[in-house]
Length: 466
Image: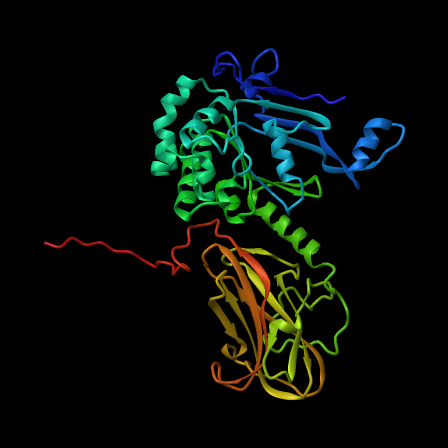
């Protein structure tokens, strides 16, 4: 038997006609303030997947005598408790159950199994356009959204000025929202969701839309004005989780697989994401020889065959072709695959190359490129005392180059691997380039990064003149 108790404050009921939020309130009023804001026990959500549309009718006619569907558990056996005032990040790959989880907490989905207790007024921003009527104007939708959240028309009128100021959409306020851009849509939706000062705020990827200035304003508002509000944030922005959450959980295939600090959760998430994404891509296999000439210092000992190798496709390669980069990998200092990295983290770039013709005076390098494809940093082995190396025989070789991640602007980056022939860092024969074959997410939880990268200030002095 499914039991769902959602407790909400009764002070903001609307007039006749009621509201969906207050209607879900459990009898007896709110629980004591010492209890958790959100508590889930054994919660699961199952969908019936039909192969053919006609199977739905067959199922309705035969009822339980025969099953024409297969079960898909979007969430299964989930236990979660969120304390009042906590900011919890929810991360996971697409299809892991994140959105289903927060929709059940917000009350827009009913769980198949388990119990959910939500103690406090909930304001949810689950998807672009949710709760808005596209034919209504922005002004009319403010009152509609406020009513859905359990506010009286008088209370929405009192908050209206703040909502409009925060949304900052100008004359479009009195235009139908179907004419809005996605950025304007989310501006108005977030303004309503946040300005009602909810006790629990649920945001599902909505802040991925909009310009950077609005995103900055939203995060600042959540940190300062909503600092005492319980917040559940579903996002793929790992830097936002690291900087704005005090706890994070990881979802995978409908289950909660990790619950801890944001940095530990990000490390766990990137490990399983890398494993799931690249496991089929040719792990293992022996090479003709192991060679670590680019840097003889180990980054976690010998190169293991379990590295998250990425096969380099032909259309991503260029160069003379007498040496061919067959596959590459990026690992942490322990040889584990990584996708998120922060300033000061050691990492290693691994090449597996095929030498078609014996070569001397080879250099190996890696360039880090931003989301526009612009190279922001990089280096090659000629920077080292033993920079150029030899491959005197044909066959396969492995190369490991060790680096430390710099203080780069948070965001998505790709790595380009290269092999050249010559003794000059800029003027040499390019034997092979493997363009943008591995991606990384840079985060900066310790301090802000100014510009493309931070050049740390060493000292500051002040003196009076006159």
